[in-house]
Image (tube, rainbow, N blue to C red; front, top):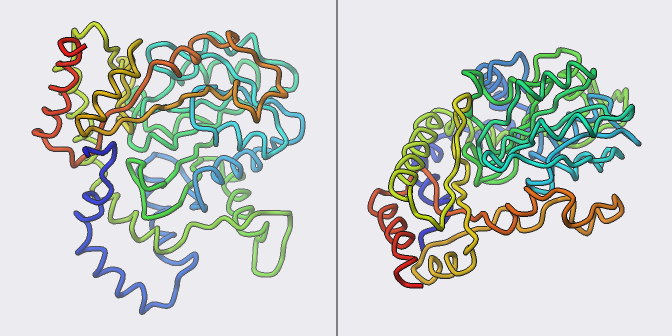
Length: 368
């Protein structure tokens, strides 16, 4: 089976280096909040172009801690996208706030600024765009609305490390940004991890305190916090991955370009769209079709893994039934949930493997 993301190949490429580092790490006896986390935070902030980066337990925690540090809580409203992984809205709800869903752009699949303004109320405190599948959202328009109405902008950049918008890194475009190091992410580790990025010193200090039980110094607790620290072991792995991430992302972009060139013109497929202002890192390569089910069935039968991202938009999830959304309220997101599917995309996909996947997709119409 040609898989969507080949983690075994990815970590095999780092194996010798990691094994050498693991030996020294084991001998050090320093496993929590040590030099590797500090170095990763410094390197990450520099790479993003932000002043501060604070390692946390996972991407969901990054969102929750960022919301908490921003003072968002009970009864506040945060405008976000219904077409993303559940954690985006879940983090808002965990703070006691209310996710307010705006429809998405049919080409980029990201939060559509044209639908945001009508949803702003006196209770709205922030906008949370998601750079979905590694594609930056329309941040100029979102930031303009945020400035006009005095709102915070919290970037969910969990899928978008290395992506750019008008030459600036995703994660440097709002008030605060959140990243995930889940293994399948472009920059991932062998487990869970996350990081919060900001250039606001007060926000950074709050997140740093919240991640460690609300404690500014050992055994003194100024607020109720969390236990959400990035492990030293994961920081070690991520530092090695960061040395390779530019090459890996360039390979993703090369593969995406090749997919688009070879599949262009097939009437039963909608290919990804990259705006001129954006530079996607193709965390996932998702294509759309009214014939998704037979196409994905054919791919699976041919030994090609596929994935549906996402089969149920957030406003129609059972967990949000109480918000009162109905089918038809956000038609673009609902249509995408019936059309889009992912095909293999990772830096270790060979040309021969990609040619095979392309040939299966090209043969679809002749076989059906």
